[in-house]
Length: 302
Image (cartoon, rainbow, N blue to C red; front, side, top):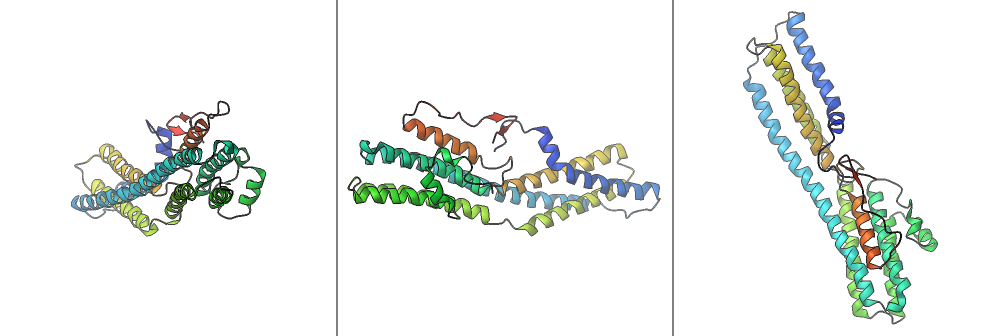
């Protein structure tokens, strides 16, 4: 999935709503203490919330940059998977005898399945759902026994190349070329698994979150303690600034994990669908080729 074009307003509000409510409670509490209870809070200078706001802006900028780097790295890896998937089929068609068309198709369909299985595994979904359309019953049985389903599919294609070489249907040089493509695919798989299993420091988000709450408290106290800023102007200002901070922080949080089955994910399902279309067109199939992943209201549909 991937948000495209205009971001749906409902999605934005939903992601910011919990923090928005907390900020609302904090602001109302401070104003209630100041006005209704008659308790005079400290006369806080605006320089303190201004300093905190500047520091938070710097921290948010750093976190968004780091999070986007992780997301962009994931997108580049899947771009390499697209290229190597096409190369694998093209090399198979060029290097393997045309009489072995069933073998070429088997390798190609395994590669299609590999893309879907890898994507579903990264998102924590059942990787073999719907793979009967691409894998034979024997292949399904082999893959289902192994923990890493994607690696098992690459193993099947590796063994296929070894069989062809043993039957003198594939020269050693051509086998090496195909093996190199499989090695690159295996390396890309490892890179995606590294991103998936490398946790972004959780303390960073916790401290940043607390810093924003502290900023809200200080800004509310400074605003409520002065008569220069009326309630009808100060209160919306506090809510707006705090909501923007939390929305930016939430954006960074979503981007840092590109394989969590969220709208901000790297669009791996759409990419896998594109790979399937390309491969089946290379096989010169005329029927059953799926359409590109649909986009509705700014989202790739699953």
